[in-house]
Image (cartoon, rainbow, N blue to C red):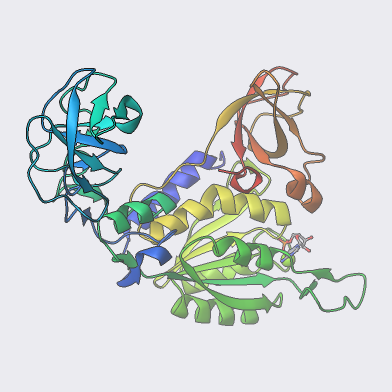
Length: 410
Ligand code: AMP
Ligand code: MG
């Protein structure tokens, strides 16, 4: 039987979650705290933006078009927050600042650089002035009652600017989802504790997972480490499934004598999927236990890291209520070294992406690609995504690359 491909598994997860989806409850939060949260309401602008006809520049507002050499009598001032309330007639003008309301009678603003002041304090034009010049009209950008943001959007920095500009001080977002995390392995020791023998190693995966979950709207339930025996795994999984929306585990999903996770999940719930045609990380368990979704990542640190990126992250966003899940940034780059690969699995290699002086991007694998190489993934700034059917590649071959967002400033 051929293995599930990466995109088949991505679709399977997306469809399963979509079919059984229950929207999280909602809560109201201040807009300044809303970045990275998922909007649970459509936002309709309560006002026009701009709210009135305002000046785009510092200068003088006129009641008519005018020509070079025309002399205008200054009759008042309109500043931001302090509108001019009188009348402006033929041959008159009002000093006006950027963002100030254009007086009702006025049809144009001349920028102050295109004027001079004579001895009597009158304004002399040094350029022609057309009607509508330098005026931002009410509702020009956003009309009142117009929808500006849609339910299901991950809120961004710029959305806060927009929302606050519309006078929206609080937004309705979905509550954070609860994700329980634990690692399995009798060899694992908590960082900061001493290793008491050469068969022990530090539990890096659980900390990596918890760190990565902090960038999503998630409340983490840390269930620490569980020993490699079926009863312990069953007990903790059971508890986790009762209190969390999602359970993510590390280790114990391959075919070794002490790999109990699949067996345990099948007793409590069921498994939708087990093996995927991807390197690193062939074992990847996706299942369900009661109302909780289950993701079982392999223990090899790089397999778990890559599996999280390829399958778990977008599933979590979906469960957080996102309607259109953002796609990772992908670009094309030419290989600067040859790369070995055999057909049959998609290979997600850790790589260094470099921008050349001519603006083109080149890419090369970042050291050995074994799935325990933690230094390599820390040095890499991108994945190289080599499709399942691809074989050995030569210098200059163009490959698909997925940059690590954190390695580049946005
Ligand atoms: P497993 O998937 O449990 O068979 O583990 C595969 C490999 O990953 C073994 O060498 C484990 O010692 C290692 N490993 C498992 N869990 C962790 C973890 N939480 N942190 C670091 N390495 C791990
Ligand atoms: Mg293990």
